Image (cartoon, rainbow, N blue to C red; front, side, top):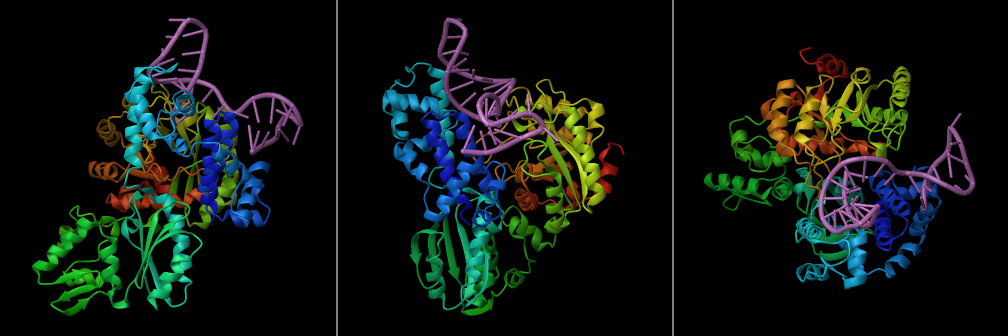
Length: 571
DNA sequence: GCCGTTTTCGGCCCGACTGTTTTCAGTCG
């Protein structure tokens, strides 16, 4: 799949054009296209071959041509042209929050800033502050931006799990096709469903090991080979530049290796200590008593040696799971198959890419029992928020579609919480809905806590969307007192969302667990803007499991009828 | 560059926020 490679080039092109002061609408057209490609779960090459690129909203004549050019020649001429006129490192600086293209261009033209070191220098010697339109506060903000930026792209770079899943999934499929391969399983923090991962470990059973590793290092997705031995190969992958290791292990050690490479380190240390106390030695090759091999073929066998049940990977963080396992008191985690509905999906009526019919069809294929279409409300102009008449028409369409589909489509809205804490529609409009998600999208620093509290007081509000507003890729989130929100949410019976979009995952695992302990219900919503994004439901479940949630902690395990019955407070 | 039940040209992303301003520019969502 070349979707991500092309997305990267389009994003770079957008960045470079922005730096050169190109028409902002053109820039955002490229950005939009890049985002669409990144979220697109089907192979863009297939679409190109079938001549269907232009069917994708946001891909027009120009970008379709560039995609085709890349697929045929491996490059995009326009990209090459623009990049060659742009100092290489300057594009990277655009990622610094609160430092935009205009300021950067100014610093480049007037002060010769070409990279991060230059930028730091002109901050220190005060020349940046002396530029027209600049001043001490702006420079201070830039400095803070640099700190944030360095925090995210320092030595130990990490990638959001949602970006990595498609890469790993297709890679695993490729490796499975190699001759002599019997089994392929990704391990590491990927398997533990951490929200970000630093590298990928894949284990495999098969022989001859050397041949398998060699084939792995020769795959087209390989950018660079770091190691290529008899049992281990290590590469940098092309689209994300992430390191991926493949290890070939003997069948009788597979469980031990999977356990070992899944981690976490803290979990393994605790397990090894436990083993030592009982006179065993545990390694990636198996459990041993002296020289004698005791177990190792499956993870269950390994844990069983110590009188432990198998522990789900999402729990393996040494947060008390081993002690609980010893007592046979591991929590009963929610399973993916128990999720019956998705509470947060955008349709074409606001800023989604698909019709409600397309969404319903896809969700039905995925085996869901119901979905809530939650478009943006009228104030959110930039996301195509619905006025009341359009909302009415949309609801009528949902009524019609419900006649046709087996899956239940709930009428929902993601309603903006306005500056004064009121909701974006009057109550009579909200009363027509099955799901009301209240959300902050504007005024991130303005009384956010009070506004959310005020919104929750409205008994028509069911769920608070992305309650902290953080983005994993760098935005810190609202200035919000989550404890107060949780306290009131518990009292009023309002649910909090686990937003399953890979860059949000908000509430995160820690806050979700806190909410569970307080007895607050949680609702997973994908925030999908196209049908491909519905698959992120798995990420939401991953967070739920890492937060030790049981089926009863989530609204998503209710049938839609149960949900509607319970949604009214005191009802 | 994308898009079209008012348009194949001329709109698109508007408003909040911040800091620098003396009426506005840059950044962000």
